[in-house]
Image (cartoon, rainbow, N blue to C red; front, side):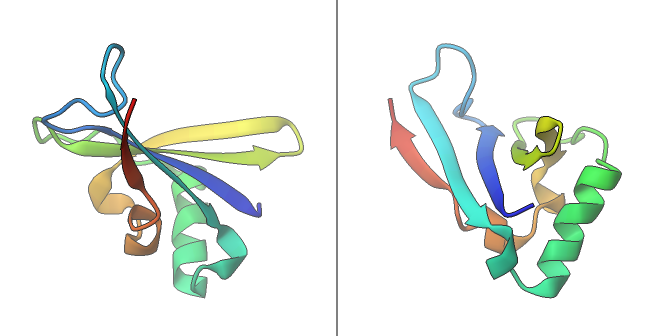
Amino acid sequence: MSRLNVERLGGFAGFGSPGSHLRSRGQVEVNDLAPADQHAVEALFDNPPGPAQVPDAFRYRLTRQTAHGPQSIEVPEEHVPAAIQASVKDELI
């Protein structure tokens, strides 16, 4: 795993929802992350947590390339390392 595509979804403004004019996304080179963050990302893909129980909470869609093609998971914001959250930039579409 070398590059992680990151999308922030949901929230009060409905980022990334169908019909939304707001999108939040970024990319992270996994090898550039601290070892603890690399381990956290691997753990998220191995055992993704369930959906957030907080209304209007953000969730993150993380996508990586594997030998079998792209693999994506969606996880609540509180499980995503800060370095990955910081890679996301908001844009109006």
